[in-house]
Image (tube, rainbow, N blue to C red; front, side, top):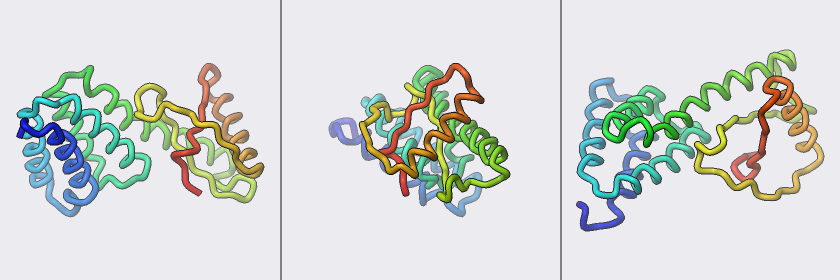
Length: 178
């Protein structure tokens, strides 16, 4: 298994597929058995860092695209990786998962301020708030957006700055959808 340098990537991609599709409609025991099997393979890997890096990218995509089969399965995988790797290695992954929960709370507060609506200037609006440095997406590309979207961006930015005075917000338009 360790003779091929692609093995950590393949196991991470397999884990990604399991978290998206393979663990659906399985009992808790079956989910735990599959995750245990993945972690046992992980323990045998020489390229653990490569697995963690690839797993982090896949997790980020699952979280942002909301394609995880089960939050409980994601949390279980994180806990098992933390046991094997330690807190420092898994801290970024754990923070990514926590960001999604915090993000839902902020977006809910934004909607409540707008009378429960996610419509801003006639456009349905949704966003995720990610902790800088913990997600694999750091580059903020230059992007010219339409004026109507710029107004929405400014509306949310003002809301966010009023709620969190000392935080800066950067927009990753290249990870959005319209």
